[in-house]
Image (cartoon, rainbow, N blue to C red; front, side):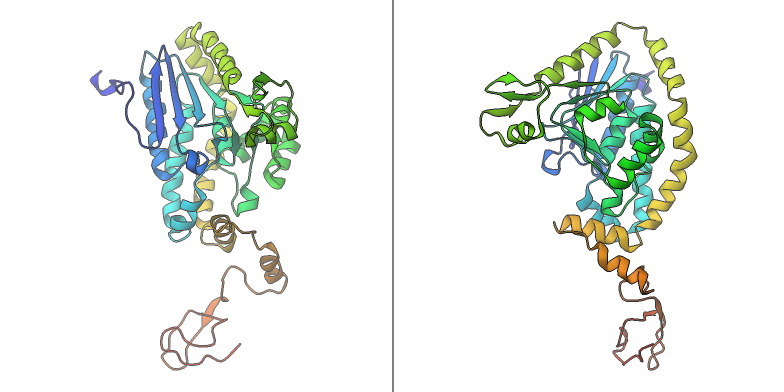
Length: 349
């Protein structure tokens, strides 16, 4: 049994906060400087925390959230992608192994996991809340996917689970068009279980805050502010309800209810892992990730025009089919005028 000894309360992680109190394990993404995007290290810590919460018999419910009031989770750290995985696409396959362990840690946790959506849940952040059992969202927050806008595909949970949750047409809208889904619409579509007021004016909560009021609250202007106390109160209601249930029955109910999610996940995620790793060798993620990191607009037009003109956009300087007549170097880009090995001129083709 000592192999399953729980982690000490207040166990120190570097990129998450992990607190166990009164039968509740609270796991908090603690990277507010990166809008609670998870890094490779974060995924390791999250997987370990969900494992421990599941095995600790003192824990009845797990609450998963993010630091602050701006973001719940914004998915993977795009800066890390641009700096590391664009350079070494083979390592993205390894990264996806950690990401799978993290999401499966949520799905396979034998305790109910509640997503406390304290801010935007974008990309992998929406996939993370979809992996949870229940979700309560603050009214100022929103959810959405961003894959097709940044050169990726949301096949780490969204392509699999959104059709189950919101239906085919709405799933395609989110996955292909990448709109921001407001808290109110998220409730209407079944993406969350409840919405908690979070916008205040001069200290008083506003029910059904408008987009303008939300912006003013986020900017802390004209007496508006963000207050998460009502969100915490709703989470407390859910926790109290779940703590008043038989733990083994809860566990098996979760296992049975996961059947559809598990089926589509395991039928596709292995292929997705390989495809995403290979896709990192292509120009779409390279342009998308770099544009994000450089804080500029993505150049869609250049890529589409190359396709239309049959100019092989897969290669920045042309397909590697040229040879040097001087030194015999092979595999040189067709767009090169000079050999990269010896500097000799290459005849244009």
